[in-house]
Picture 1 (spheres, rainbow, N blue to C red):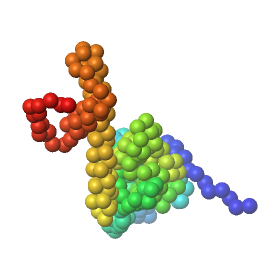
Picture 2: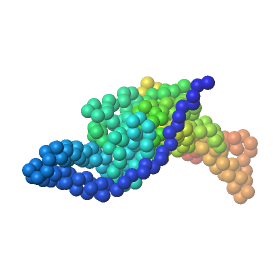
Picture 3: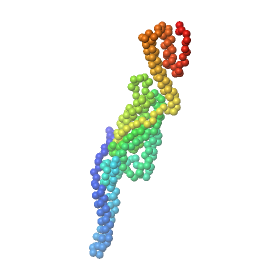
Length: 333
C-alpha cells in the first residue's frame, strides 16, 4: 500500500536570545584575538608545545565565531522563516525579534532562487514576482494582491466573454506553503486562473429578461459570483496554507467579435421594455378619460365614436413624435 503524502503543519521553533549570543560571540572573538600575543610571551616561560596548543585552540575559536554569527536571525513583523536541519523540518520563526538558531539550519523558500531571477509566469494569469531579493528566504505573511488579467471564456450560453479579477490572499501556514507545493505563488496563480474559468462557464453574462427571475448572472450578480469564486479557490489552496481574503471581478464584457451584436440586442430589449410601459400607461389614461366623460355627462358617445376616440388617444399617447391635431369646424356626425 502506498504511503500517504505527508501534510506538514507549522510549529514554533525554540530559539535563544540573539542579543545575548551576539555579545557572547563578540567576547569570544576578543578573547581568541588576545590569546595570540599572550601565548607568544609564554614561549620562554612555558613549553613551546603548550604555546602552540593555545594558538590552535584560539584559532579554532576565532573561526567558530563566524559560524556563530551565521545563526543570528532578524524577523520583521509579518514575516516567517522556515528552517530545516539536514533535510528535517525544525520549526518556523514568526514573532518579530532578534534570535539565534543552530548555524547549520537552512531557511527554505521555494519562490526565491539564489542568484537566479524568478521567471514571470506567462498567460492570462500573469503574476509578477520579480524584484525578490536573492538570498532572503523569509516568507511574507502580508496580504498580497494577485491580478488575474482579463481572459476570454464562454459563459453558460456559449457566448464568448472577457473576464478579469483580483485576489487578495496571504500565507497562514508557512510550513504548508513551503513544503506541500512546489511554488506557492505559482500554485495560487494557476488555481485562480482555473477557478475563474470554471465559475464563469456556469453562469450567463445576462440574467433572464423576465421580471422576478432569481437566476444569477455574471453581470447582475457579480458579488455573489465573486463569493463563489472565493469559496472554490479557498478549497483549492488549503493544501498550500494560503487564506483567500477577497475576490473581486474587475473586468467583465462581451468579446469584441460579438460586442456590437449584443449591444444591439440590449438596445432592442430596452426599447421593447420602454414601449411596453408607454402602452400600459396610455391604456390607463384612455380608460380614465372615458370613465370621467361618462360620469360627468360631458358628452354622449356611441360605441363607434368611443372606438375612434380610443384610437386617436392611443396614437397621440403612444407616438414618438408630437401630434398634429386637425380642428373640425363642423359637426362630428
